[in-house]
Image 1 (cartoon, rainbow over the protein chains, first blue to last red):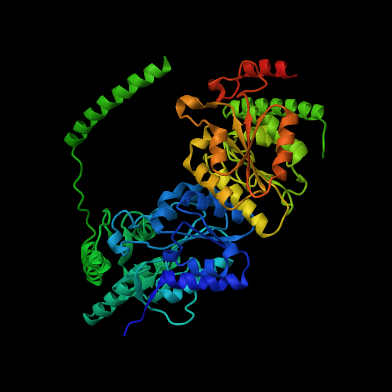
Image 2 (tube, each protein chain N blue to C red):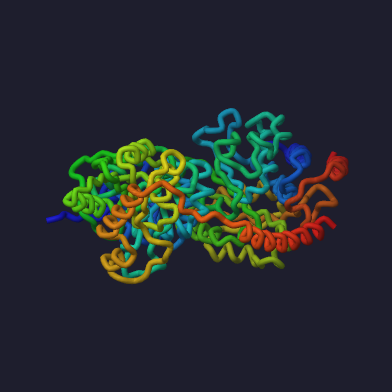
Length: 351
Length: 271
């Protein structure tokens, strides 16, 4: 039987344990300590736990101040409120001065389920990855969560960690280790390699297993650090496999898929496909139903593998239709109209 | 470090001169709000605060947070004059590679502990610093200056609740109540009155002063230190552009640096 473990449960437990040995750890929550699982730390160390109420912006600023005061603050709430509501506080108060704040947000992705689109955070990786100095991590299972939390406690600088509401299968056993910026290579496939993180990792592993039965050698890489991305490993997979698939419980815009595409485009532009949420908001439903509805199943990964392999076999001839002069001239006329308007405004301003 | 009122007044004149000169040289920046804050900053850095410019990271130092980060020239003027860095840097304000950026950045300017510039974020950070100090049983005082336009930011009121809820009495906030913001009079843009009642209702000890009278500034800072169990807000009634007759009370000088002519006129008045 598959053992399932919640990454948020592991986070809550490890944090409470780390609090014993490390008195500098301070925990903040925004009225969701029961859900983020910081409640265990709060129970054990009430003097080092601050419930900030429903005020995520203030929570991030207070965490920044605690870091200035040489503490190691862990700030937790749901992913959408941490990264969405308080994005600019994270940018200005935490990342710009490069402060030692750990943001550990639960309820990432669509497997939040019934609460619906308002609570489904499918943009957190995008929002955090764009910030200079920020490290972005999503552990692939419970064991990796423990290794991640232990590692980031000793690391100095801003870190964002996403945990999930949903429990998912245990992949690793015991001390699987974790190093920031180092992907875990399960296998690099001769035909294709799937790069995934979080909940999608075990689906990628299942997909690879089934593909192997068909004679397709599909590799799997756990890119639990999305930033800084393990460029070396990704380029090695690109070189060996010649085709990559990314799989993530996140928007296809500016998540892991985009990060991998950026590296490929600049270094080795081989075919790739992204499995992710295709520019849509979430909605209510059971997690399993939502994963199917939004195309985040093992089946979707297998389809992406087939698609990318057909691209690999295909010729490299460009299929882009050249823009005709006629089309250009139509566009040109419109441009002239709009530029004339701007010119008028410019003239007015100068007067 | 107790200086006479006369000495402080003399220093404040020099601070205003430095503010105007560096802004004119930079050819951009926020003049009005730097001048309205000048006396309070002078009182803090040259009389009230325990700090050591030769040891900016001294563990027991008092901390100042300029939440209204656009008044950076005033902060740089007092930090430079205190000796945190050479005053030669003043002429490099806002220039590429300078240690004096448009808004304060921690780690870039010696003596700047908190990065500000995006309004509404300083009080939360001051709360965090004050809480860390309390946990460590340190005696340090945390000062934070806010603008009156700035309190239109919702985060300020979240932080106001936090300071009262956690009884952060090692914190003293000062509101530079100059009545003007970039788009006009504060109460035309978005009314913030009644300020004392609002802060009292949020659980703060409130003191009102004339923010240009050193006796009042210093005695309010002393009184704040005696209050236990709640944070103090000093509402300082100030004049935007204070010290330069043609800038006083003028919205225009919120975000504009003095021209060469204006600078000469202003310096003549101040000297």
